Length: 237
Image 1 (cartoon, rainbow, N blue to C red):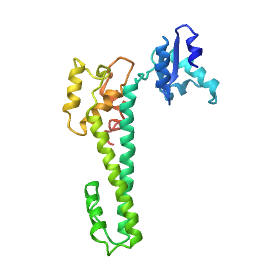
Image 2: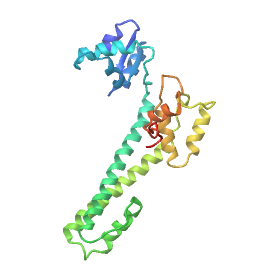
Image 3: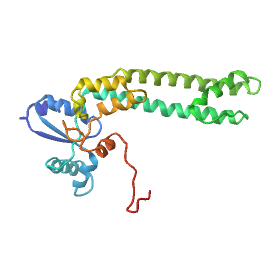
Image 4: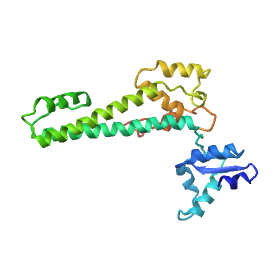
């Protein structure tokens, strides 16, 4: 594929912003081509018949020529690396919740309960150590395995959060209206947890047309998964 595009004159290449799209966009840009990434949901409106490779390619060719088409900025390797930290942390947080819920449910079968919430998980782990007689040996072994897995997961989460706190965005002008990169870097370093996580996510997940700041706060929020509350005409949720 690289050899084919290398043989072409510089041209416009349109792609759906799906898996590996940012990698191929960087490769084509390096060859001198102009790349436009489009959200698949916006391209689908141009599919004239059942979805297949040919119909999808035709829809992309039609959508990429629309002047009003909203584009997805091409992320560089550094931005994708930071986003990988966010995705990995999100995965570990879900696993942590699963482990805590499993630990709570298993202990409840033996009449051992604790207040809900992650901050009370130490009560559960201490119970396993101090109430040996109340728990059968097989149960203690399995519960201790869960506790060890939980401790390891929480340690990995803290490592990722520490790494995110050290990240300084390389191109903050993509999303911020501040005068320069140094101001954005200062905000990242000064922001309290979880502000650092939110800030690094914003800096590495630009929205809007390539090179432009967010057109509005609503559009900026939607790009990071934060949407405003929906109200009907009567003002009732």
